[in-house]
View 1: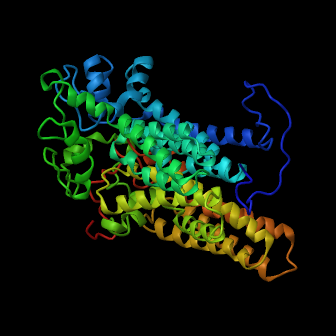
View 2 (view 1 turned 45 degrees about the vertical axis):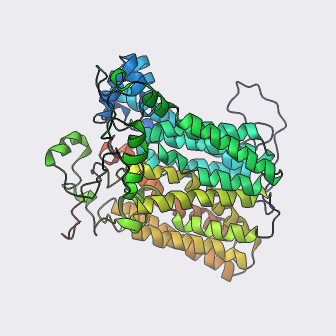
View 3 (view 1 turned 90 degrees about the vertical axis):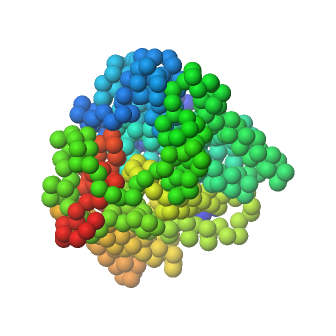
Length: 544
């Protein structure tokens, strides 16, 4: 499917004609470059090391680990997600949230590392599948870049190393878009149904957050599937019904079981799983209260200092560690995705993503309805818009929530790098898009990093210097026509490195346990170890 883009972003490559045995996983299939599979496996290995690095010192998630322990020793507790061995009460989560950890605990025993291990696996699976998704859509090079960007996104580097249900959600969303892609390219109902099943399984992990992908998949399919409108609508309706059935299966188990035969449902005031899922864990985050749902309160108020005992000493107290000091108050409301802990977790490549969407949609504006290139841009764009709008207006109590933005950010960023690189090599007015993208990324990185002025200052100035050098080299190569081709190639390579330097630095910082995050909140770098509901004390002494 590398030919799906009319302006194919990849240079021509020679396809391997060798037929390798299925066990030779290091050899690329015949429809991919010979070097693609080895590079992908290298990226996956880097991701595995990054995510698993802190398994020996990982912490247990408060209360959630208690639920895993009770579920691994009692079938009734397993079915209902009870937090105690007697199965008298649940947490404010569906039992499906903890199934991967329970399985791991049954195999390896109950340890902090065994509860985190499933998330490491989920992370590596997500990296591999993201390559397949983008390779089908745009080619091997964008696919490999997507896998690398996904692996080195700071929130992913922290989240997939801890026992969090968000890892299962992200993996399910990635598998859903993988199935969706097969469906939209061929108009296949079966693949679209599988996408709905994966979304339903993601619902078991994080409830309504899994449904936030549905507008992107529905709009993408209705717009681009190569079949008639009536059939497209029918396919979306059937897949939607399957999604609903899989999503609500565990809620039905709670609801249909007599209250005397099951645990009490936390997150509700009337022992209702529906109120817990759709009220406390759903609409309550938007300030909308449902009858029977406990009110969700995350107003940023002060937390009892005793609660800080859940943070292991080796992680360091962010309010006492000078490298984690902040220069300005934490953002709330609609701006929270553009500064502070949520922005440095997932938002380093926003300018590149925006330029890719604008330019990509403009390039494909006259394409036929079923054009896969435009359809993919629309799907990823709606994904970002839906998640971004909801997170902007809702309470976001844990940083790992925004990991759901990672697949779309990675895919669009990778496509943009290759498209702008190709445009630059072809000369013309469009050649200025790459210098513009690099300059925008350098300015944006300087802004985000300035929130934490004491965090790895040598890396900050190194990344910014690299970016400025890349912009200068790229501009000179366009202005001075006699410039050496080697300078052009060097400018291109340095430009890509400059774009990815800042998020990669934050992600790689998880190799230091003090910057690796914790099971209560996933964030790499200077926000590691902070309880999100407790606003930090800025370095200048201003209020948080």
